[in-house]
Image (cartoon, rainbow, N blue to C red; front, side, top):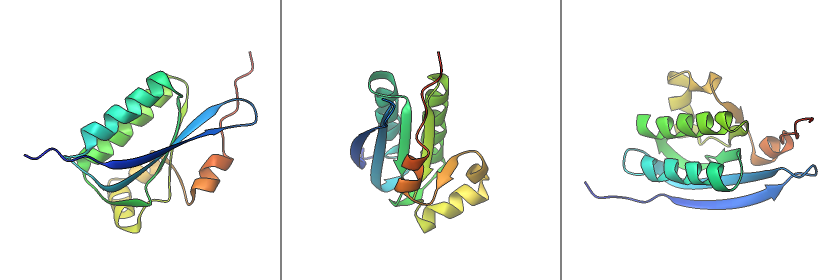
Length: 126
């Protein structure tokens, strides 16, 4: 099988209290041919950059079970690192997958990136 790559813009934001949030903007398909690469990028980011992730799915028009698995794994990694993992702007064609699998109740899903960023993580009190 041909190895495909997923195009993914990545932007970094800082919150007023000093947290870093990375917003991933994948585009195309999040499926068996691209899910592992996507998962690796999430793992790298959580391990090396920040444990606060937002995935903007506005340009992802197809997600299969492998794609969902990579998102669940990213959420678990962020949780283990005491971070946050949010989805936003879910493409209408991909939204059905979340609803049918009831994953829309597992993930924090926001209508827009601005809304997801507006719920920025707060630093834990020491």
